[in-house]
Length: 389
Ligand SMILES: Cc1cc2nc3c(=O)[nH]c(=O)nc-3n(C[C@H](O)[C@H](O)[C@H](O)COP(=O)(O)O)c2cc1C
Ligand SMILES: C=C(O[C@@H]1CC(C(=O)O)=C[C@@H](OP(=O)(O)O)[C@H]1O)C(=O)O
Image 1 (tube, rainbow, N blue to C red):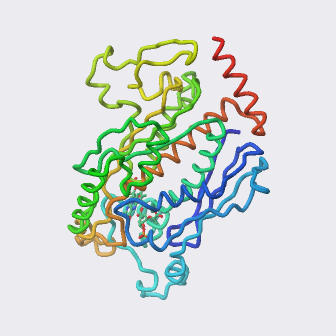
Image 2 (image 1 turned 135 degrees about the vertical axis):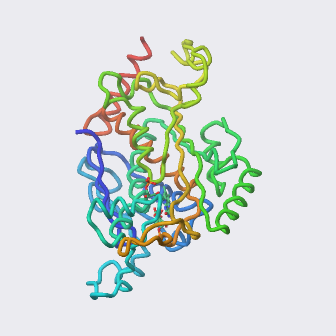
Image 3 (image 1 turned 120 degrees about the horizontal axis):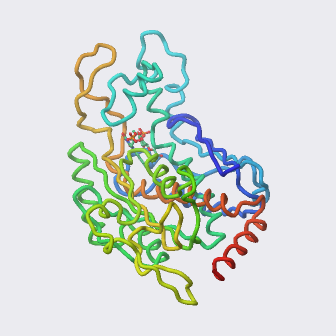
């Protein structure tokens, strides 16, 4: 059985819950590192007041003893501090005629899941849609991804993320070594490596917020230290670049994905795109460039995996767009819920962790075993085979 997880929980409910299945035994979990990923997701310029209420930490409630996985499903929960303010709104039996009691949502926000979800699930209170469609759920996904990341780290894989663009403002693309990239983007409120761009982006987000508007952007994730041959071309649904693209697209508000130079590849010649194959005894086979972002034939080629995702602007606008009241069908402006103005730096962390998940899954598909020791033996055996090829 391949690695998998499910999440449950509402944004203003008591907690998010996740169950991970398929992890090997004897993976040492660093809880501080796990919580560090959750805290990174909460930060980033442009977030709303909710992030000051939450102090996300994951509580492991199954599958781990004395800091190590046992091979059983790993269960974890992330509590919602905001729940104390929403307990009645979420739970109280509605008093007939009193929409106040449940903070009913009846004016769907363009760009959010409200109207489609209301129609699909036949819900006349759109809160029942937004509670689950909210990107609060990405906290649970980051917790799962952070576990996957620790699994990968045990095999020397490192992952970093950086913001490439927020609206009109583009960051200079950095090709710093991965450790430095991680350190620099960690310090930055917008996850760029350049201080001047950071200031510009902050001022720009402030201006957008003041105008009651929102803004999106582009983020990049890089993974280094992966062996050649994760994923495969032999079946459409086992191509790893495709799985990664799907995972990135599944992040709330993501509208596009690129691997390597992505869409630019459609504007260049073959000679300008393909990465030439080189060999030397110390490095083995490698490439002179990495325009294809570490993938050929749905498989890793041993070069860094480079993925970009584009996030649309946040749908909830303090100066709302035109909508329709679902009770009267009369034109009305969309409902205003507390909201972020820009969540691109936060989404960058989500992307790193969902990519980590897909990489770990592919790694386990290839080297799978029930314990870390078994996987390591399989991995070392394969590395020796590749080295002697
Ligand atoms: C980290 C993060 C934070 C978000 N914060 C908000 C928010 O505060 N308000 C909002 O309307 N949408 C927010 N979104 C986007 C919505 O969740 C998303 O647009 C919505 O679920 C509809 O899904 P879709 O945009 O993928 O179609 C956020 C997304 C992410 C990744
Ligand atoms: C709660 C999170 O993000 C939320 C995502 C979100 C949305 O509509 O997606 C709407 C906002 O929810 P609220 O109205 O409770 O402030 C964000 O704060 C989080 O990232 O942990």
